[in-house]
Amino acid sequence: MREINANPNNVFSGLTEILHFLAKLPSPQEVLNLRLAPDVQQEIDHLLEKNRTQDFNESDRLLWQHYEFIEHLVRLAKTQALIKLQQSQ
Image (tube, rainbow, N blue to C red; front, side, top):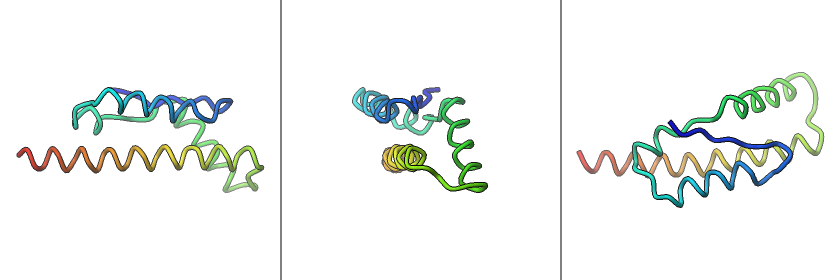
């Protein structure tokens, strides 16, 4: 299973990895199997908890927007992959 890794110190790292993955033209099943790396999920969980208990600072807000953008791209890719799989059945 492929995982999405991101480095919070480099805002484009997660996006770069997703673009490299998609540029390889993965099969629909590979796209559907795409999951977050545990360290990225932990960072997102930390941001969610921080948002519940205190306000985001500017750095946190930018990082959250970065993750939202990557999530949007992955959702689009997974939607198209699911459509392809359904059409092939």
